Image (cartoon, rainbow, N blue to C red; front, side):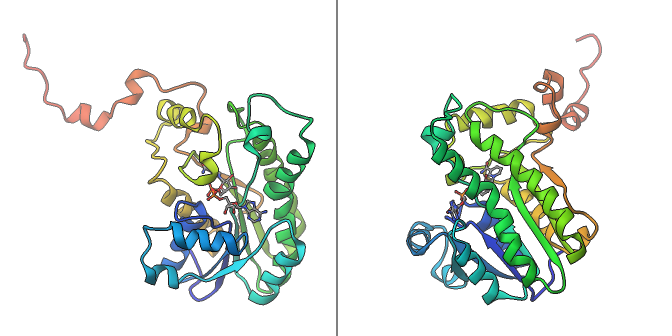
Length: 280
Ligand SMILES: NC(=O)c1ccc[n+]([C@@H]2O[C@H](COP(=O)([O-])OP(=O)(O)OC[C@H]3O[C@@H](n4cnc5c(N)ncnc54)[C@H](O)[C@@H]3O)[C@@H](O)[C@H]2O)c1
């Protein structure tokens, strides 16, 4: 899965609820050396102050770098310092909720749309530009997406950024295959994080998953399933997989409509239930 002792850069840590945190701790548990990036010093202090779930020892064990993904020099410096790197996780997105996640597609907010596109999509190419030279033995880069086959209420411009991000994953897979660097995305179902809390109607998404996901979906616990899939795509067991989007969403993205009544029950419980005695 993860190559013990090698360096993995996990970009986009905000707090202990971040997908980046679940992914980074999973990599660490498997023996990888994890370096998190946080946007800046203020975010790091906020992380340390707000992460009440973590002990002082856990906080002290974390290795941080600062990196605003829109600043090329900061991305360059991270990978120049950490070379050689075996894997990178791009777990970063941003959209102004007022203009990019509302009910209408606000084209007049072009600066917000452009910034969202830069941070949520183009930055993966910036990462590739500086990370690939720091991967002399090849490696893997994984980005985080959300179902682009369907259109969700309020997701608005972020849905467009995710579709572009997946296209960029494929373009980078093509460009860097002969560098033996693989690019894939994990498309996760809805999970409770700070970014998710900014999406108006996030509760509606949770209800939708309850109604339509074949597998039960837990918006808090299932971060681990997402982290496990990222780890698979980072490591040698996915050696010939590149340019792909792996859905880790309980199966909701394949559904055309909600589960029917009889599909919501648990067939094992139904089979285990004692039969009614005849005639009663
Ligand atoms: N939470 C979900 O339901 C869900 C589902 C599918 C995909 N995702 C994706 O997972 C990724 C991580 O999001 P999350 O849900 O863990 O939320 P999060 O808020 O914990 O993480 C988002 C991160 O993006 C970072 N970021 C924003 N602008 C930045 C910039 N200019 N430079 C550097 N970092 C910047 C933030 O600092 C934050 O650390 C995102 O790509 C998100 O779209 C989330």
